[in-house]
Length: 83
Image (cartoon, rainbow, N blue to C red):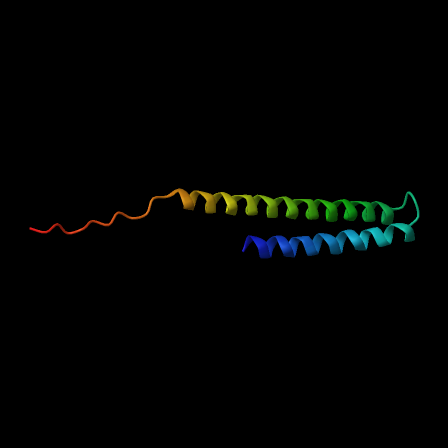
């Protein structure tokens, strides 16, 4: 579930960031449109960085859980003794 959510956030961040980057050359310096475009670009970059970090943390946790699972003992099987 984390993988799907981080992939969706990565797509959203790229969409917002690229859209804002494309708007920057079309706006004049010092206008409200330029400020909104810069803020949207920063927001898109923040979303991308956050989703990449979340993806790395979840993959590290998954590897750690797999390593710990290998260390657990197998169930003890008792044998019947002959009388």
